[in-house]
Image 1 (cartoon, rainbow, N blue to C red):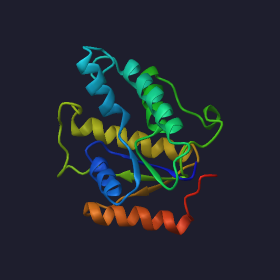
Image 2: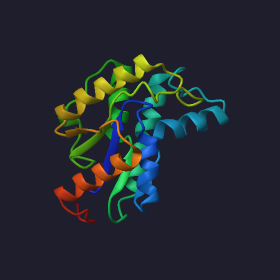
Image 3: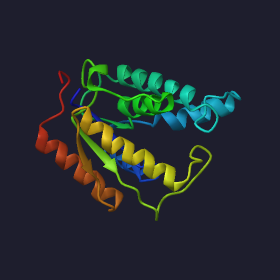
Image 4: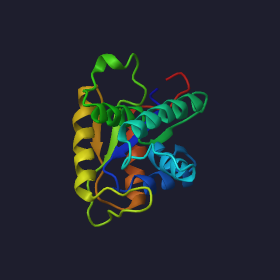
Length: 184
């Protein structure tokens, strides 16, 4: 699915702002599963929360990531995901004390290039959906930077630049790799 592009990386690193800019420019975007789950679980007084039951949270994130992916199969052009299937699978594997392997994925669910937001302490903030501290966010980033290449993906670290500059960089990098197509 070369037209399905993941923006991943450090929590609080500017992913949502970048996705908002890409949406403003007319691209399809998919909100991060984790934030939606936290809102859903809090409203339902559920326990599938990262600070209560990480395994249940990660399992729900993986289910939602797959559903998001399937729901966009017929979309045309680039579709930008705030995190993706690999992020959720990695979180679930870590919660279970397991390791992801390339054999667990019959197909590559996303574009081979993954754009990563690095740790950026100057903009990091906790909120109702993000309770973990900066050290935990950095550990998550390091885990993802390790697992994506092991699964055959190429990582492009985004600079600590303006949202507009980051969006320009992502679009230009994708245009150099070829047009988004429905057949991808």
